[in-house]
Length: 222
Image (cartoon, rainbow, N blue to C red; front, side, top):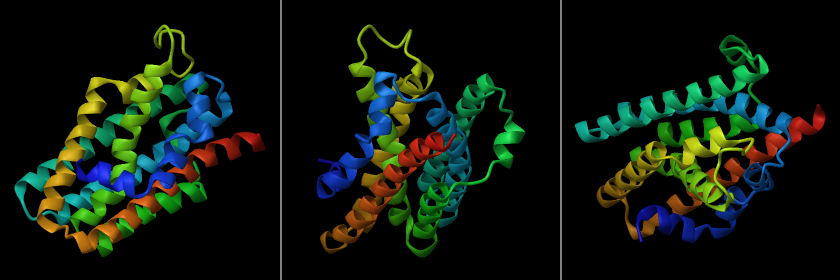
């Protein structure tokens, strides 16, 4: 069991609330209202901008070239994700400039600033534990949803999103993040510290669940 699986096992309820949220289930079966998906995409675009800053912070906090390269790889993956969001939002006539000008929802601010604060106040391990529910969780969600869709993704309304996170490229990003988390833990984690890291992981997972709920709530207001 790697560190990521240990963290999940320590916070099973928080993790389940995140990966099995009603938003995720509706996304998988294709019943998610388009308005909820659109609201989520715009906010997630803003979210990723802040996560790019978190990876820049990871590079700053790094003490080895290997850690800096891991931060560089994470930043590159984040920037690639933003292009997916821009491409999908263009279908509704939303431009990049309009997305950049969108107001950050409270759920977006809460999660991204939590991660940045973990990195600023803690060490590199704290930061990557806070990042892990998003980075690795999306890979697990994408893979799980793709496996449940009969006949493949060709006609699924959210095939681009699911295909992105279920695809080999993003799966490799998640695996690299897990390996890097193990390397950091081998250098800096003690058993007495694990409880604090698990608490941090659980908080990040709950904030992820709140982010899904934000998409549903914004759609309900339309």
